[in-house]
Length: 124
Image 1 (cartoon, rainbow, N blue to C red):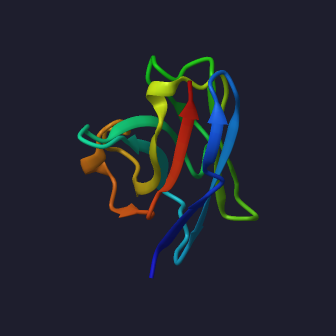
Image 2 (cartoon, one colour):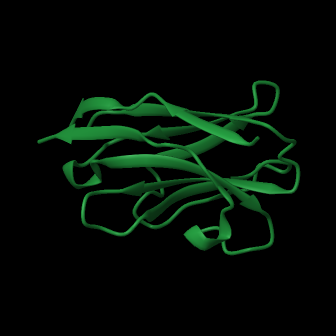
């Protein structure tokens, strides 16, 4: 029943910006953490950002801090990821995910639901 549908991916030049959206449906996400991950071919899935649905606390890895911003609109049941100053090595499929709070927000095993992903390509 739970669906996470990403959108907003595409081609952007190095140094440019992109805003991704994740439409979440199928349940109330109170008590959940919503996250963004990315995965390039042949590489492990990498944590990008996370936000608690209820309180809006945000978390980022060092690679994203200062450049990426995660947010959510409770009324629209949508999570956003704004990415600035994009680098070519950040070309990946970007996924949104949802998991219960209280677990490691940076660990893919903490998430129960995943979207299909949206392709982001940064040209050099």
